[in-house]
Image 1 (cartoon, helix red, strand yellow):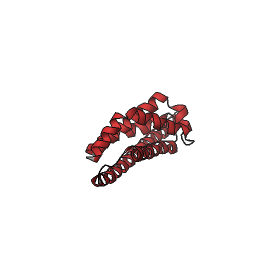
Image 2: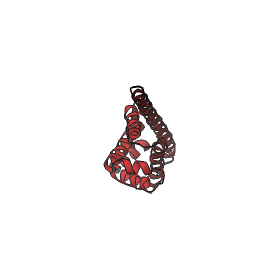
Image 3: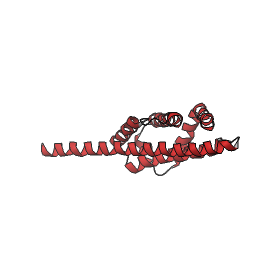
Image 4: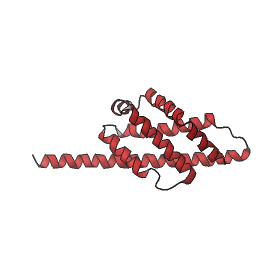
Length: 157
């Protein structure tokens, strides 16, 4: 009950969530390359996809939610020249912001809501841990591809 109520709230306020999260990233000194190299619209779209995947995860916990998307995101950001540390920080910041949002916006109406909230937070952590893992896999894949490409170029000279 609590999770469904909260997810409905998140879906209703998705634009507000994205806007506030983007402000948080803009104030961070740990995402400079991300802010310089990734167009704002692309950052916004990625954030929306993360929150859409998160709500799907919280409702259904499908094992594959977002796996391909986060590997592709890691590859794309690496090819854009975004350091792994900034990829990690951005996903971690999304998790942190979502926790803050939940604490700020959610009112627990009944004692039973407390346990639903604890389960929700546990699921939230699982989702973001998986997202970070697959972004790193994508980064490693792109880095490996770049090393192989450079090796091929050096042998053809």
